[in-house]
Image (tube, rainbow, N blue to C red):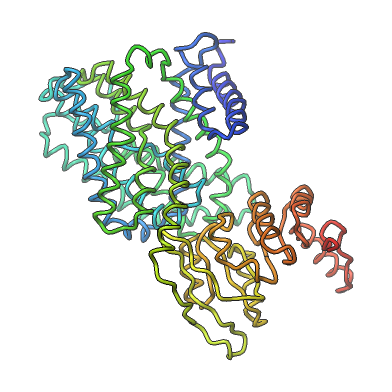
Length: 596
């Protein structure tokens, strides 16, 4: 391999092997990220064969963290963040303290110093941004209350780690390490002569200054840039503007204000979310987000020495127990203490039961300051790898427990009567009931029959819903986005909260008694699962779906959809009818209803 192309070699080897092992993992019904980690181990320095550049891999992975947090910010408003501060702030602080104490206890048992125990415990207390967000996105929980609590909790943890990175160099001498490292050029490294309170005060001042700049200047400048570029009509420039804002704000926040790259990107996305172009910005950045987040897992795998599992097995198991059991137990007790439902407590516990990028940064800083022995860094890396591997299994266990919780809630809860919230006698109105899912139980079943089930209430679904409402046709909406659900409740539309692919959620819509199913969601593969579920429940239901390609049309019709509307063909149909003077244009065969 030529030495002049380490970047290309790292990207090709990382993505290529990640694809191969990710596909194998998916084939055996294992989370693909396990394959990504295995790919990293194979190209790492601890296994024979080709060795990728670890430094370049880490920097590429950092870009993935930036883009991922930017994407979360696009869907997470300041109002959402403030709405969970009552649980996220005290919860994260108590959980960090508990996990740090457990880590310090293990360090004491291993004969390490107090400073080593502090660094070790802090490294075990903070969850991985990438792993947590991947888990929430796969389960479509980002915009739910549980998702907002988890993300808010994560942000508080990141702020605490930024403060720790600032204080450790100043306190290293007191804790038994080297008072200051020479090559730590970041603005996080402040002179010890400021004193502890001076360092803390200056750090808080920098964070406040960054937030003020983003809220005062960023709220005006960032949306203005997006609108200006959008008016040029160049998709290439718009995509470039989105990436430049995300990476530029993150880098500037780290260098000028001492804020982490991830937090800087999150605020950039949150400010950009106030623009009506935020949906397009999220779409344009999605491919790069996915690619670079894969490189993050590859870079983590490169740090892992598989032979350490044999030479250091007991300390590694103890470290893993602190991460997976100790942190989870602390988070569970805290959430329950704040009187949140059991399902929320379990989800938060599973989300935080791993460590990642901040843990590596703390470990490297601790070793550089002569606070943490190299064995401590190895234990942190092993704990990170194993906890990331175990984390999907915890979510699978959570999904298994969900059915038990649903059954328990159904037995314990008294039957609920549907409460009408809108009259049916007014022109253009339908009788609707507020059907709201319980956090720990299945959503109550609808009382409607002979109705239409509308899945998804985005740009397409909202237009369909408005037409159904105007025609006084009874219908309900299955949706999982909190903001959309709140708007539907205000409009008096009956809703079932959740993902339609979930059996309990779909059953609550009474598909057996429904006349029609309309799939307004753009994801054809997810829609296909719903079509199969609908056909099994009611073979005579009329299924209408949407697609973006001929392949998706054939896929959905093959699964049992009666009519599949392809957007591009409908646009062409409208244009041709306009050109031909409103003369009807025959529909293409691919979108005609199939014979019963």
